[in-house]
Every structure is written in structure tokens, then in C-alpha cells.
Length: 400
Ligand SMILES: [Zn+2]
Image (cartoon, rainbow, N blue to C red):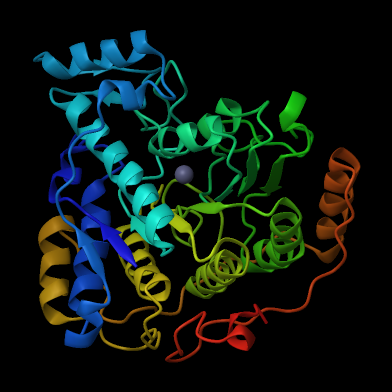
């Protein structure tokens, strides 16, 4: 696996009171790195220095006037709101945002060339549109990274498990059939950005290539996983992507302060394992993973660190394994709160509103809009103990 992390990614700083912080992804990278023994360390290819994407790279997706405006804001001395009030443009923001784009472009290039998973925890800024910032996202690193391959008519599958709909990516390629976009998120009737409904399936060449799976507030693994098992493998096998891109937001995790979904670490493990197996089966291991949203540092850091081990095909720690003392000290320094002393702990989950008939109703709605049938899928597995690396044998690769 290629891990892309330049400490300067943390210069993407929207202010001390802003909920989005790349420092939480920095804590994930720190925990991941401390978890590696000597032989594991050799199996991870690090990219620790990333240059900002050039204006011409940014303009493979973004409009030239927007790119120029952000450059002017970033060169100024004042903080300017880049959207309706969520996304401040601070001095230096242009270079910081462009560097994260550079990281995802680099991740994509390495995955493409070497047929290995790559991971940019700082990326996944999926709300930025061609001509505007939105939802804490100045430049859309995912959209920029896939724009040129799609223009060359390569087939890219984009999976988005962030709690918010990835509107910037979906609308950016809404009429393009070379992007299969599958997005699980909290229902747009209650959550930002208010889009991502089953009826939104793409237009023109893109018709039927955009799949939106909205979940109600309070839904958790019991809603997410059966739908993921039922929809994602058949859609990907039918589309046959050349590269899979996963936007791995962690804001659907139980306890996130901005979102009301209730996913657990075990759900993320099953999804990661399934996606890695599909990347091995369909595209020679070409899988690009980005971070994304996530506003609870305990969840973001541990889930993304463990994801790094899974995508690196390294054994997973048991949920009750202790986190390193030095990492706990770092966590306290960054967040001012006591670090979790285990890799995962019991999370109090409120009762879910989700019922079996909700799955049937949502699947029926998707089938009607997409003109495809989605039969019931097999049960999956969770994360209960130390695990063998995923994807080591064809049998083990099956998501069971
Ligand atoms: Zn989000």
C-alpha cells in the first residue's frame, strides 16, 4: 500500500473553532505508523512530501476563474468566506487545498502504475463544485484526480460512505457514463447538502450510473451493511471499473457530533474488506482511498489507522488491544481530551428507527429508477478479533 501524508496537509486549517480538522487525520497516520513493526514498515510505501497541484491540474475539473479567485484569497491577509458561511478561505488556503489535491492525484497515479491500494487520509473533499467551495471543501481532490482518466474514457467507480452526499463529485460527472458513483449517506431531507436521492440516477451517457442510498437519522450497521452487500458487488461487477475510488468518511460513526448515523467500527471493516476484494477481483488491486468527513477525533483516528492496516494487507489489532502510550500523549496534545486506550470500545447505540421493510422499500425505489434488480445478498462478517490480512487467497477475498 502507498500511504500519502505530507505533514503540511494540516495547513488546510479552517480556523480554531471550525469542526473540520486535518489534525485528526494526522492522528490517524500517527497511530497507523506506531502500529507497524519492522517488517510491516517495509511493506508500506510512504509519500511524505507532496507539492500543491498546479493550476492546470486543478482546472482539469475546476473553472479557471474560481481557481484564480481562491489563489487571490489565499494570497491575501484576511479570511474571506468562500461559500455561504461554512468554508472560510484563510491566508495560505490556496496552497493548502492544492496540496491535498496533489496528494490524491499522486495516490491515483501510484495505484494506477503499480496496481496497489493507495491512501490519502487528508483527501475526500467531495463537496467542492467546479465553480464554488462548499461544506468545508475548497478544491475537490477526488474530482480532479479522476477528471483526466475519465476524459480519456477510462471506467472509474467511486464509492462514497461519508455521512454526507458527495454532491461535488456526482454532479461534476452527472452526464458521464465513465463514472459509476455509488453513495451511502444520511437522507438529504435532514442532512447537508440536501441532495442524493434515489431518483438522481444521471443523465445522458451517465444515465443509470449514479446510485444514491439515503438512510434516515439514527440508522446504523443494520441499515448500511445489508444494502452495501446487496448493491455494491453486483453494480461493480456489471460496470467492471479499471480503478475503484473509495471516499472513506468517518462521520457516519456513532457519536459523531455533526451527523446522526450510528455506524460501528465493525461496519467499516466489512466495507473495507469487501471493497479491497472487489478491487482485486475487478481491477488488479487498483484502489484509491481518501479520508473524508469525521468530526470526532476518537473515531476518525482509530478507524482510519485500522483501515490503513487493512488496505496494507496487515493483520488487524483486536478491538480491545491497547493503543500506544506515545500516541495517547499525542492525541491529548492535539485535542485536549483523553485518548481512547483501546483500538475500539463499546459504543452506546440509541435504538435504530430502521426496519426490514425499510430496506425492501428503498431497494424497490432504486430498482424502479435504475431498471435493475437487486436480489438479497448473503450475510457478511464483523470485526471481533485479530484478523488475517484481507485479500490473501481467493477464498479469503470473498466477502462472507
Ligand atoms: Zn461528511
